[in-house]
Each structure stands twice: as structure tokens, then as C-alpha cells.
Image 1 (cartoon, rainbow, N blue to C red):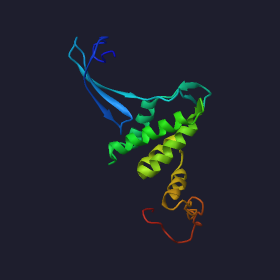
Image 2: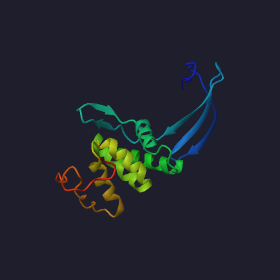
Image 3: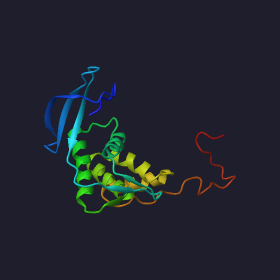
Image 4: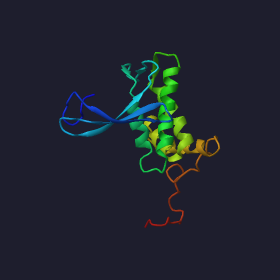
Length: 177
């Protein structure tokens, strides 16, 4: 294992212990050249998974990228790190054991959304807003309607843009001359 600080090729393992409910091994390493210390994780990989992107490009599945995207959605949310790790590991295991050599990025996004919905509603909305490329407030309204009981919200009452007040009606709106 190369040292991330100096690039030295010989690092020493100082401590190893099980992690993530025994699904990984956490190793504490030290570099004899620069004395830098760092942690690595060793996980079982059932098979190589290739992600088919929307652009048609094929890239290897990257567990760290999945972890980062979930971390961004959960930023400043009080969620136990073990629950986050279980979510990432569960999605990874599900993809590897599905038996399909390729998986679409949309399928991964749906798995993440389903996991976040059960973990934290705010993170779910954050992730969905980026993943589904929300452009209007109505997109949020529709998504939020599915959070409460699974049924969409009723249509909003018409606002002033869609039902303009006739001129000369004598009524004034607050804050307007």
C-alpha cells in the first residue's frame, strides 16, 4: 500500500480490527519513510459492477463516490454514522449480488433515494432535488407530498399570476401602492 503523504511503497500495518459488522477490516498503517499514519479498509467484493451512465458511458462502480453523494445529502444532519455505513454497504451488496454485470445510474439513484427516505427525510429531499434535476418549486411540492402518507399533495390554489385582479376593483393589496 502506497503512502498517501510521500508515495512510499512500503507501509506497515500497526493495527487491524473488524469493522462494519464484520463486513470489512480496518487497518491502521504507518509509513517508515515519513512517519505518516493513515487508515485503510479491506472489503469483500463479490463481482465487478459497471455503471451505465445517462450519457451512455460505462464506468466501474465506485463505492467511495456512492459514500460521498450520501454524505453530501446528509451534511449537517444528526444521523448515526453506523446507519450511513449500513446504507452504503447494503446498496453495494445489493448491486454486487444482483447478478447483472451492468447497472444503470438511474437504478443506483433509486436505491439511494429509497435508503435515504427511510433514514432522513431532509436528506431524501436534498438528494432527490439534485438527482431528479428539480427546476421549480412545484417539483419539491410533488416530492414532499409523497413523504407524508404516500399520496401527492392537492393542487395549490391559483395565485395572483394565474387569477389577476381586475383593474379598478378598488381593492389594494398589502405592500402595493
